[in-house]
Length: 127
Image (cartoon, rainbow, N blue to C red; front, side):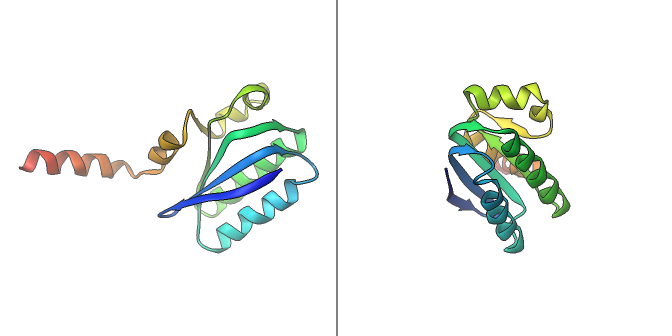
């Protein structure tokens, strides 16, 4: 399992989970995210397109990360969740706690302030 810092888009950090989240790597995952919070990031997107499995420890880790990000004034969003991982999230109703998006682009849009699209619309009409 690897957690790959995929990219940084302004104040949104994208982390790709590659493999699975389980007891062996959950603490490292938590430590990596806590470093990001200490460095000023409060918005996290976990790209699950390469996430093959998640154990009960991994599910608990996601809950802890969501709580810590909320305490830092931020949020965690998941994208490209598939197969058994999405089923596990649905069974224990974690899909209601996280914003889950079909792809990275839509997850990014969910972090945009609501005023951004309104400002673009008013600028287009000002012409």
